[in-house]
Length: 201
Image 1 (cartoon, rainbow, N blue to C red):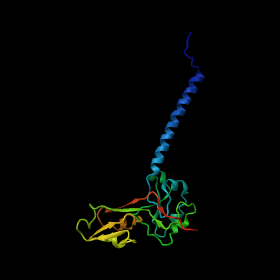
Image 2 (image 1 turned 180 degrees about the vertical axis):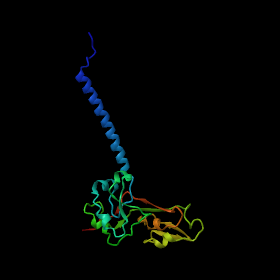
Image 3 (image 1 turned 45 degrees about the vertical axis):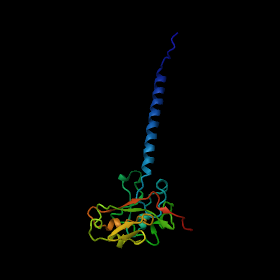
Image 4 (image 1 turned 30 degrees about the vertical axis):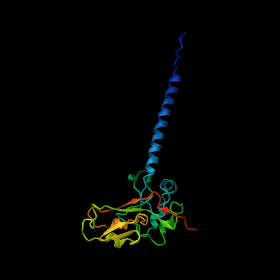
């Protein structure tokens, strides 16, 4: 008795479609995983931004915060920013956050992607001792004198500056003002710039 199953034309197409669907599912799953991995890489967000992954789902790309910024520090992410395209970001080297007292960007956000808090944390400034003029023996204190939180977020130790990481809010003014060739300061963005208990409405 022949135990081999006779493959009909309908069986052939059904099995082919099943294999095709399985392959497509695997590809989609891999793509989704890749997208999730990209989400955890934070962009430099405006003050009050919630956790990056949630921010990307909450922000409606309305540009209200960018329009409200009086210093044009908030810009819209371009296509090369991947999943962040269309969302608000800050490029400190070009135009840092000026830490407005009334935070108009947060007030303009109606989607709760930016929330008021008792303290913002956009990132942390890091000084490259290799590029820093002061560490090379030259007299330079631009980052210290221009920091809105000087003596708290940044201090002078002799003729050299040191960032107090827990106090630095990542506004980026020091990165913009740094006169060292190629820049000696880089602000590393936080994954969540909304720190502390939100203010009561």
